[in-house]
Length: 234
Image (cartoon, rainbow, N blue to C red):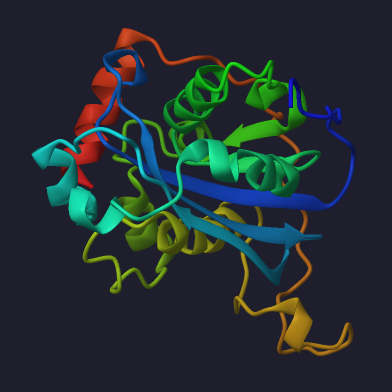
């Protein structure tokens, strides 16, 4: 298979909140993705549709990273390689708006994985639009710490299960934080379990009009340093 069918981003209510875990902090040093977690929002409601996979990186995980996410080399030994999950992953995210906290980090790793396959796969920004909640938070809370944990504290989002970083759990938490950041909510619930007129579901709220859609830029040395601080301090 030489290439993947490309779909340009489409205007829809579909958003994918995404997070990854990795062997280290810089793909230029040979680090790889080891976990991907995604949750789907459609018209600002959780659909219950998720994507979650562990990936064998075919290299050792740095001890500092293991202390953050708790994922070991032994655990990943029998997991699929990225080449085995790439098509399903792209199919899940294409055409959506990705919501990521510190997007250059995750997108940089994703683009690196696509390039390593040598199959002329598109870059992330060619198949999705990307919104960086860290940039949003810095604009909304200048001079404040804006790690995911600090945003949970600010918006009173329960992150008590976050003993370790985990891609799917962090995506679920970020989804709730994002909804508060862009209008507020009273309850986060699956739309699949609620009728359209059920007032127990997620309240309909408007997106902030002064937050533009953000163009993804690849990680700079400064981004890497900031991610290192988040990686060890969140």
